[in-house]
Length: 294
Image (cartoon, rainbow, N blue to C red; front, side, top):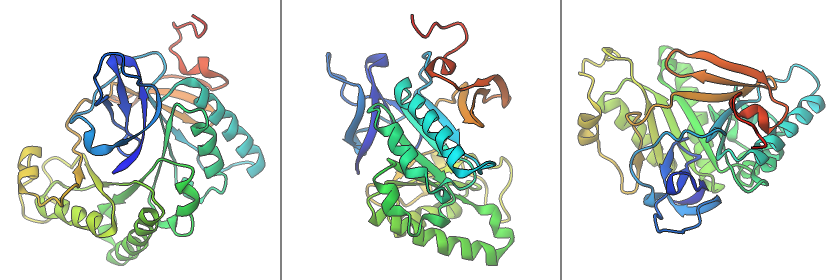
């Protein structure tokens, strides 16, 4: 699929994928090739495997808009201020999440403010149920939609069936509007369960799936052994051009999260907050020992 990525010159050229949140080496490795800013590329040219890039400004951030606790106009002013900081900072990817941000009327304008900086790509992570009627607005504002499916709703089959009906319709709406759609699902890694998700993605037009890390030693009541990643790939029937992403590559040492007008760096190993401070300028995204004006 032809879609938008964000590039930077680090390590001879890197490319951030808004659909998966992964960073790759740029496929164009020619000396002197220009790798900076938003670029439109065929996702089939991406090198296999993600890389972890260490640099003062984070490669990507997760931004939780959350549920407004004050007036909408006041919160939108804060959101646009933060969006302006991210547009100027040089981050490559901004993942907007938290509850269901698709419900927020101000979302397209906030995303467009980030994109206007010409450096970053923007994705939205949400259950997807409320994409109906919103997909066309988002198509001009975000670069990818990550729709989360959680098999734990299977405990209530009526709720699960209703949610899936809403979600599959929403995926089709997004694809019809030209939005790249990536499905995420927290599922036990049995062949049948992952194959069912691949079939669902293919039927609705979503071209990518990431089964999030499975529960080790749990078969989900299927009676099947859990498969290793290699065994899983060999056992699956992948449609032509379909992209399956497994969380087996580089694990980020930390992630940068923005919430409640604060920026937090979180250690992914222990899920501990390494640092938290108010986000007032680009300098607040830098480590404390780095001079923003150096």
